[in-house]
Figure 1 (cartoon, rainbow, N blue to C red):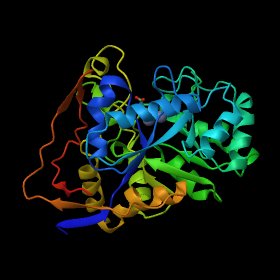
Figure 2: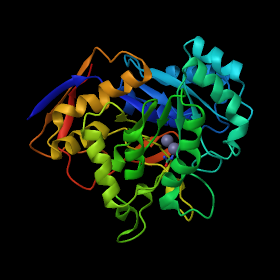
Figure 3: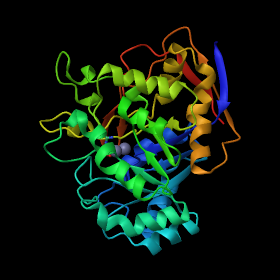
Figure 4: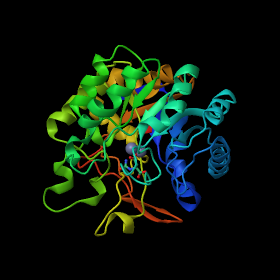
Length: 348
Ligand SMILES: NC(=O)N[C@@H](CC(=O)O)C(=O)O
Ligand SMILES: [Zn+2]
Ligand SMILES: [Zn+2]
């Protein structure tokens, strides 16, 4: 296949940041994607509907002329989140989901939830009104090995929560293990998972072999090869419970390339090229559209986009910039470590 036309995709997990970084990165998403679920882990985080409304306006203001893009806003769940505020946010159409960060699990998550009990009133309200909970599924207990944190989260936090509130709709975000894939597949309903571009491409060797490579460090950290293969199988399967959430997470290079580098990989620039490559390798190009354009909207109760984009296979490798310059500083672009031949040639 040399060319493929699909519905315009959406990104169900994206970090746009704020200020100069927002202005520097937004076009890399809005050029290709129609909608994205916007992560609320700003400093300070987006905790109330009023915060989300103001942030949404800043995003729309940063959008280049002529780009049509809809930010789908989320609230950062805290132990003090008001159930009424969440319900009003949903009813007004502003809020698409609420995000659970276990305290300390990832970038800017120190204000996250320590005691799930304290979040129960909000979670109960969400179950009642049908508002999805997006979870960063890792425990933060220091005794648990970082490579096991997702699996332990499933057993000790996610499964008990779902047993207690079976009506709550949960998106397990950036699934990185076969344990996550198996748990989603075994669920009786009300559970889906997003998968990033980079976790389909790298395993943990990318971070550690031949030197420490901070631009492949993200959270949840990439796992062993068998996990990457399980993620690929899930993504290309067409199973409606799996869809794209790039987790494209820009940090300026000085904050990645230092003694304690930030977690996050910036993939917005070349995500569709990377994904077309992966799906082609798996002989599943005809299921790319399900993963990037159909399964996500179906899960979130939205219509798929009507516009189409076309990707075509170029004879020569497509050259992407190694880094982008933003007003906040340079941001390195994800390097898949193989030549990319697929290119988005026509956007909506
Ligand atoms: N994925 C990451 O490695 N980092 C994200 C946070 C997150 O999604 O966990 C970020 O905000 O930088
Ligand atoms: Zn996360
Ligand atoms: Zn993220």
